[in-house]
Structures are given as structure tokens and as C-alpha cells.
Length: 583
Image 1 (tube, rainbow, N blue to C red):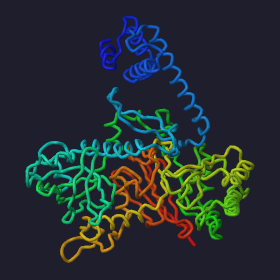
Image 2 (cartoon, rainbow, N blue to C red):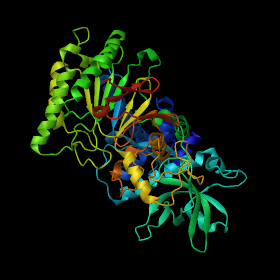
Image 3 (cartoon, helix red, strand yellow):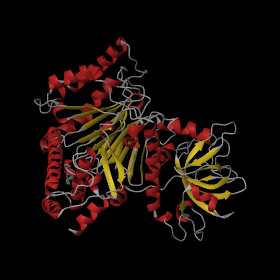
Image 4 (tube, rainbow, N blue to C red):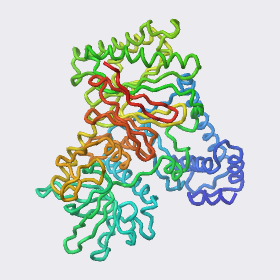
């Protein structure tokens, strides 16, 4: 009872005795967690006040509480019904899918003093100026909290020395930029800021955060730890502030240290913040793991593509579907990322009809009776197909903006029609990029189709053209002066550095908004916080790679049209096997 009165008083509510007893009785009997249930009741009562249903000075009695608890019951029952309906729709497939527009935004509720998920599915696609500011601020504040939790940056002896490789006897701690002017001359300080290049003749580099900014001298900076550095990225910088010139002279520059998925979930409050909710099909038997096939750049207008698909079906998809049918488990998943044509898709009618015809040919192949299981059941009854659009595909909206919308129904309609006629219970999903999937074993996978490496290379060279000091990496070339450097700012093995950059930044488009346009209202859909179990970066500008960084499996499947390359993912442990169809 004391806790209830305290929480209500903090939120400006005055309770009558019968109101307090009604809340206490409901919290005890509710199936929700006690604190969560209490916060929901208080939130709804506050909604009554804001809507004018009751006065702000009204004492909350039992009738008002009963009205609020009835609304809580309706909300929870509706949520369970929706979740149950979704589960029934794909129970056989044992797959959960979220497109970018359905992702919930993680935010900190000051009143509840905990992290919450806000439904973003009803947000306007095009936000206002406040949305842009909020996207920047949220991205920075989440990085600040993540870095602040890192033991190497805790406010203690040798704070940041562990990560940055500095003298362990230096007492450094993470500061905001407004603390630079209060540091003593010659004193070393470690800050978290955003790299910004001023629009002037000197192309001055600055560090910014929501509270201040400072001109940065990176001419002698050692870019520590690997990865790419571009404008708009959040970085950890160590150096000295020159009070006479108001310039922060950076000695070491690095990405924010990452945090594992388990550590983040524990810090944020547990699995209740999962994007997929708490009602998930979780299997523990690895024998139920049917392979997922991931490929990119199929180029359906190429005459060599369909024969490759045929060999993929005969050699992998059909045997996997047969095993799934025998064991009565979920079947294989085929994830096809764009670009679906070798030339940029356009909107004229003849171009649309051409793309429609290519998808119809693929549907004809997949629904062919020769691939039936035991000569009776269509392959499509055990196969889930997911389409993820590429940067040159025709989509529902501008394809330059991220998140990128799905392929239009008008283009996929011939594919759907053929598939449905052959197998009405088949499951075909036209998704966005990025999209999130949950395996039957509870692992989260993010699929992203974008040529990110090309932009990282170009913008990294633009930001640090002449005084770039190469990252300390075994893949970087050693110069005679002892400085590891690549003349074109390219790494010999760029895949791991691409993975490190994306995961350390915890964002799929870690650039300035002027360099990589996004929907401001859906910036949260591009965040990797908490990090997934597997991240598929389908990038035509990057070589094929398969690496693991910070407990995240990161891979690029390569080009299916050019190299007949694809990935085989084990949904049980998210292990990946790069594969090629032999010629």
C-alpha cells in the first residue's frame, strides 16, 4: 500500500481510501507484473485527467480506479488476441517478422523511471523539424548510456585507458563537450561527440553533442581500433583542449565500445522489451532447425538466374522441405534481397510489366509439380519466402530514403496469383529494408540491403583526406614510418571493419542526415539496440564475408547473379555457411 501511495503522489494523484484499496486488490490479482500493472493504471488515470473526464484536483476513488482497471483489461486482452491471431497465422511456419514500420521505439519514461517501448506504427511517415532533432538526440543519448555502462569508461581510476590503450595511470572519465572549457590546460580529457564537417573553405572538423560543440584538430589523431569514420558518426575522442585557440586537439579517436545483446537486455530491464513481445515460440531442440537460405542480387531479368534457382531448389530447398515434412517441423525459409533486376527499375508501364513477368517466371518455377514433396504436397506448403527490396528496385515510395518500403503489390501480384493457385496456404512476405525476423529458437536476425561500404569509403576519405592515420588492424598495411595506412582509405579486408563500424555505432545508417536521408520518425527502425544475434548486410559494394563481432554474426551473402553465391543460416545458433552453386 505504501508503494502505491508513493507512486501516485509522485504523479500528482491523490487517492481516497477505497481507491487505494481498489488499486492494491487489482495489482495483486492481475497477471501482469506488479510495477508494470501499477504504472498502467496510473497512466490511464492521468489520461482521464488530461482528457477532462475528471478534474486535476479530484480525489481518485474506487469508481475511477475500476474504470481504469477495466481499460487495462481491455488493452491486455486485445493485445493477447492480436498476438494469438498472429501466432495462429504462422504457427506452422514458426517465424516472426517485423518490417521497419512495425518496429517499436525504445525510450526512457521519466515518470515510470524505466525503459519502455512506444508503438511507432501510427507515426506519420514524414516528420517535422522536431522529429529530426529527436532522432539525433535519441541516437546520441542511447550511445552515451551504453558507453557510460562500459567498465573501461566508468568514473574510476584508469577509466578510459583500457579501451583507448592509454597510460593506465591516467585518471580519465567520459565527459560531455561542455566540460572541455573547465579542464585545466594540458589536461587530457575523454569526450563522446558527433563528427561534423563545417561548410566552409577550410572544411573545419567539429565535435558536437546536444549540449555544446568544439572545433577539433584531428591532424595528429590516431584512429584507434579499426572501422570507418565519417561525418555524423558518434565517436570517443581523447585529447587536450587549448583554451587560447578554443580547439580540442585529438590524440586518439575511436568508435564507442560495443555492448553484447545480453548485457543490453539486462541493463534495460529484461526480455520484456523485445520487439517481438513475450509470447514467442521458443524451441530448444536443435533437430528442429531447418536451414534458412539468404541470397542477394538475383537479377531475375538475366537468363542465367532461373537455372541457378532450379539447382538451389533441387540441391537444398527440396531436401530440407522433405526433412521438415517428415519431422513435422517448420520448413526452410528463402530470403531474397534485391536488386531484382540488373538495371534500375522505373515506373513506366512497360518497365513494370517486364518486372511482373520476371516474378511470374520465378513463381512458375517454385510451384512446379516436379518439386512436390512425396509427389503429393507442393514445395510451397513448407517454404516461407521473404522479399527485401534493393536500392535500384521500384518500391512503394522513394528508394533513396531509409527505411526502404516494400515492393509494390502491383509488381508482385502475378507472383502471388501463381503461388496461391498452386498452394493457398503458402506464406510469402514482401518486407522492407531493414526487416527483423525471429527464429523458432528466439534468435533475432536483421536483414539489411544497402550498399553501405561504398558510402563509408567515400565519406571517410572526404572527412580525413590527408592526415588519416590508419586503423590498428592486422589487415592494414604497415608503412615504413610505422603508421598503418591505406592510400585510398580502403582496408585489405573491409568486411570485418564494416561490421565493426555498424555494430559500434549501433545504427545501420550512421551518417549525417544530409548524407544519408532517412525518415526521421523511423530512425529507431535503423538502430541496433540491443544488437541482434545475426546481421545480414547484403552489400553489393562489399566483398563476401562472414565474421563474428561482439557476439553478433555478420555476413554479406554476395551476388547471386554474378557469383551464384548465397548463405545458409542455421536458425538454432545463427551460424552461417557461405555457399556457391557450382558451375
